[in-house]
Image 1 (cartoon, rainbow, N blue to C red):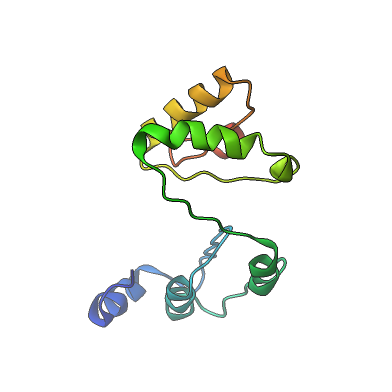
Image 2 (cartoon, rainbow, N blue to C red; image 1 turned 90 degrees about the horizontal axis):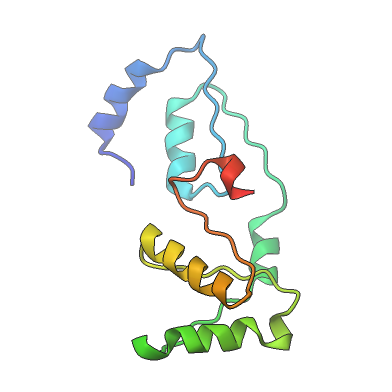
Length: 125
């Protein structure tokens, strides 16, 4: 979320034009782009692919499942032949929940990886 304009103007004093500032991200929302243009001197943005390309290639499915049936439903989806060669992302509420789910899936012989903010880039590979 962007700060108030007065706070943004105050933060401009922190950046000096003789210092290179680099931002790296897999995704950059419009608010972050606006903030970067406000703070950076002649920002250069490199993009690979396009947002539209991703929208056309990603299929989102939302299912309502009762708590006591979630793991059973997840296993049936992961073992469904329609998704055999698909990359799937499962969102959970917490880092601890992600670790518990990964342990459950591994015990069912389903390969998976946990990605969260406490993991380094090397650990995420």
